[in-house]
Structure formats: C-alpha cells, structure tokens
Image (cartoon, rainbow, N blue to C red):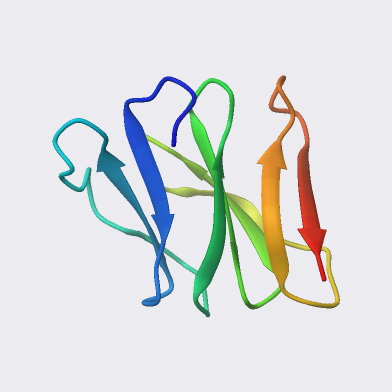
Length: 99
C-alpha cells in the first residue's frame, strides 16, 4: 500500500508488478515488465514516486511509479531469493532481506 493510501502495488506470477487504485480497485496503467521470474516483494518510496520490486531471481528493480519505467539496471545483492525490501525515508537507499 502506498504511503499516501491511494494505490496498491502487487507482484505477480506473470513476472510483472501491477499498480491498483485503492479506492476503485482498478489497475492503473500497464504492468511493469522486466523481471525474469515471479515477483515476490514490492515496496513504495516515501513520496510514492518509486517502487522497488524483487522477484525470485535474486535481483531488485526500481521503477518510476507514474512513468512505469525501470530506473537503471537491476541490483544483484543476494545468494538466495529476496523476501522483503524497503526504502529509506529519504529514498536514497533500499534495504533487502533474504533467507
């Protein structure tokens, strides 16, 4: 759920991230595509301008929320799949946890 409560981001079995309007439950825009496996974890930045996503392929991708485009290359940081991710309040860092 976005920090402002207006939208919900979900990871999907089709390797995408989807953004939903929290009030209407209607998908906003096209799915965010670029992962190579099931997306397990998603997180919003504090200002809702970015979404981080982590699939089973042990990477993290950062997206511009409104444009739906990936920011930079995927981050490779774990030897096992990533169970959770979170942005720092100032959006300059992202934390991730793995098994």
